[in-house]
Length: 292
Image (cartoon, rainbow, N blue to C red; front, side):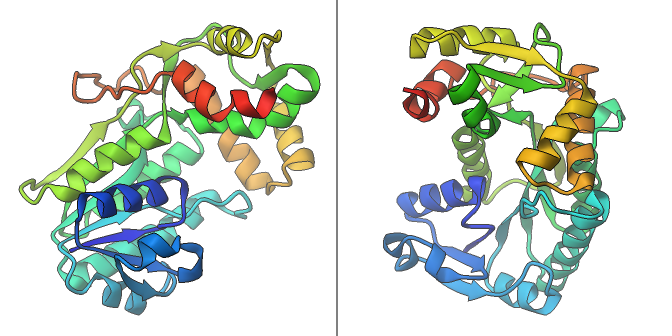
């Protein structure tokens, strides 16, 4: 049986759906089962509780040889590193207590770069903690999600622009969440792998934000522009318009700065690490309808 944590999250919900469609035996660990679609809920086992409750997490893992673990998304942490570390330590203890054999963990790319990368550094530190649980681990080292563009919807609608503290001409990997989910499901359904390993997962091409703006202009028939802003201005936008904590705003800005400084340059890209969904396909399905 496979345990899926964060089954209502961006990746967890898609992983859960794909596993159920495959007919896999699945258990979910969730605070509120009512947030799960009824058609899926009737096909899975349910354990309720918090990922920060070691006893409840250990109980949920009973009978499960494999677990998908993701630190829950939040934008209001007071201390980002401490937030991720706390979840990872509880998970590592629960995995060890339950004798779970395999863990698929959602991490971030660029672990070999040793750059200070805010949110990504926190993910890497948690990866190290999970890797000491005694279980075999596949850490999915992902770049920026295409879905982050959805946070720019209001600006795109109002001004035809989107802004980040990045050089608009810098090429770097990005990926659709559904492709991350598909790779996670491959590992979760495979009962043969052992050992601890990071696995790069990338979209089919490296992109600049100016290229994304150009493609979005073509798809919408409107003029879309990308604007590079300073880290200070980006932090101000996160605090005032998105109401994040200062710690999160700083950590996200540090992450984007590190990406612009080559965070993903050391990540090995292979045929198996490249996933199929292009940015144009993703935008046409997820963003263009919001802008027309």
